[in-house]
Length: 509
Image (cartoon, rainbow, N blue to C red; front, side, top):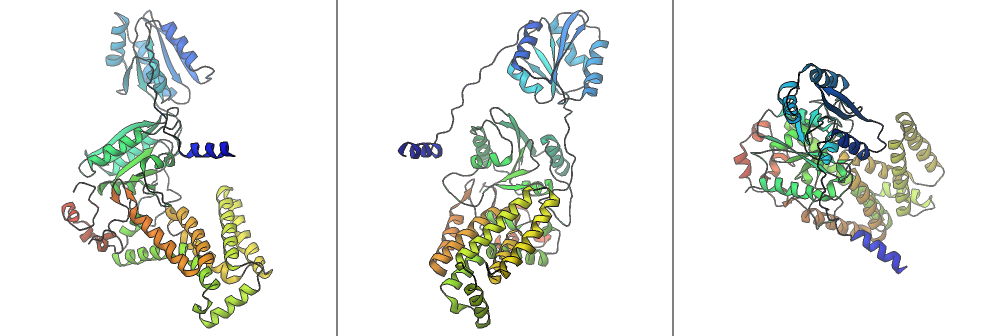
């Protein structure tokens, strides 16, 4: 038992892996040796393609990975010009001629090691090697299949662009470039994952973003010790500030390029991950969960109304079941008389306590939600119908659960969908408040709410208070937090905005 407990402690207190110094293997002047070494490097790789040819009496080879390059472009822009050109001189001179006189592309890189060779051909490049020289050149011919641009399913708006990010990072970068026609837009490519070598793009406006935050973000990404990075969620624990355990995330996520561009103009930094149709945003504040692109397309009074509606839905989703259980268990006299009679009758006709009943309904709801989410779409609709009509109605008629409890849980669950990005913390907090209300009454709910509020206020995002500009309170609260001002006010110069107490000023005060 002691060994088992020690193993668990070691798992959660393990130290980060130390990055071993990378070993490099230089290319040789023997084409035959380079080809054999490459084959051993890609042992049993059925998609490795090596096309050997003669260029004016000089042995050469074109190395690539099948289905990562465009074969038509390879034939027209590389192989055909190589055969048509009359080479003369040493192999080094021939390689220079290929680079400067033969090829019809400017995406050319010099290679001197096998590590560079493997990394480039796995990224959709073809490599040209000549016998008699220890250098090679790579040509960008990426031609792998990718999903076309479409409207994001989880970030839908009524007005505005219908374009969403796709899995190809360079396509996502081009969508940002098309919207931000400024030389100040910087797109820095980094790599994460010792095995996957996943491309990560750091996007920011040089005249808006804080240089200190940009440097700190790059430092944190360089410290990532993962072997594979397959989704943006892999990066979040390494990007967030350390020292505060919280159900809320200080890293935003979106699938919309127009949302990213709006955040960039505020001095934020976006992180694109190759293979994922979404972007991370830092620094990210709690109030931004309640803001959408539609808020800035509608009239200010309606945008303010919907924003208050979102705040109300969030608090209802996390507090309503807990308050209902607390009042029904300890403070029944706080219900109105007519409501008290119905609630008391429903509670007395069910075999479970009010807290157990509410928790059971929440667990059943989460099971149905997860099954509907993972199953094929037609079956997901069937699960929703069965859960809503059959299970709910039958359970009430059978006397297993009460109608008031089912209604309270349903309203809280619907409220959590108003802010989809806050669903995970809402679900956990809803369970926590329910247990607190069932065990300690309204005082337990109040104490837990205070703990959650203190946790929010103690959290930071790259040194910026997570609850800014609400705490510390400033005039920006009445500009674009609780109230959405008109565009004539929002379009004030950045200098005026930075002078507002409590406003986010990208960390460059």
